[in-house]
Length: 326
Image 1 (tube, helix red, strand yellow):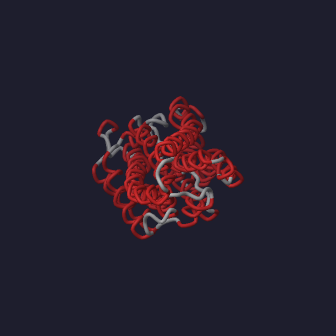
Image 2: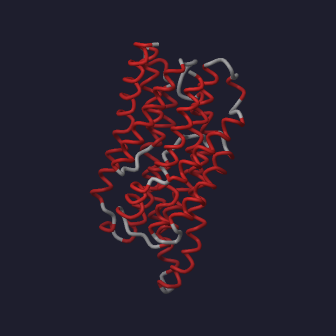
């Protein structure tokens, strides 16, 4: 069962990278600053590096949401619910949160396993999941709006050709920064889940931290998933929501990456999808509110709201099935 948990966690990490490729490269591809091939290679490499640098989020996932240990099939149920939700939203081309899908599945599975809500550390869920679910997209929108507005003021005297020339280069840096922060936050979810499974199985002490082999395995899985590329979501985020110029792509990526870096420092498993998507909305709104396709934005936000309750139900249902046979 422990080997199954590790296998499913790495599959989840791979799908997470595949599903969330758009977070790092959608704007640079849509503005034609990078070719899709080069953007994916860069993103995969920096996702790998980012995954190895920080473990604050992994520690939150491993010990921050659940009291005591769990049966291995409960962790498998949580992973399966996250995988299923990611595949559904990828098929529909909706940039949903892999983070909230995994945590929702973990909550639903743990409650059914314990037949009690006391298994969950609700204060941590509120502080590090529910509140960031509301605040991080709003902050992403504000950062995107303010950075773009500032750039408009600074570069208004210059020609469009001059601005495009320089920001075509600067956007490569902002895309790299975004890819790095995505790896530093998102890859850690699977690291935390594997560590939780190792502690629950009694083969790792809770104070031991994240084993190096877990870091490497998750970093590789995230990089491989990113290298495959989720083109449906790239199209939704980078092209369908708002037509961006290189300066707008730079503003959106820089704002989103700064927010994710701050959240990672505090060990909060924030949704990189939410942050970059609303940052793009903010960039578009800084030009004029009608530049953003708000009907598409509304559909995306509805998917965000539905993610946690949907995966709680999925995690609970899968755990109930497992309990019949285990």
